[in-house]
Image (cartoon, rainbow, N blue to C red; front, side, top):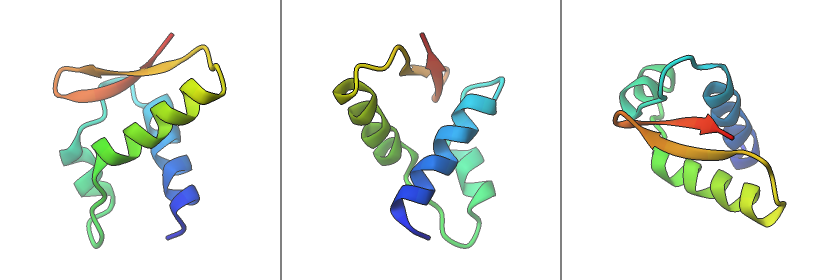
Length: 68
């Protein structure tokens, strides 16, 4: 999978998830090739910061959520 595509998928999952997105949920979604959620979140955070977005990703209850 192309890295940009993977980042976009994780971002969509963060947006759509009513609960914090955890590594265990990512492992279920990407069964054959589990991704490291914290690394992808770090890349997204950097993108948001560099482009002055009004959202951030917060660590919540052992997972991650998009917040304003």
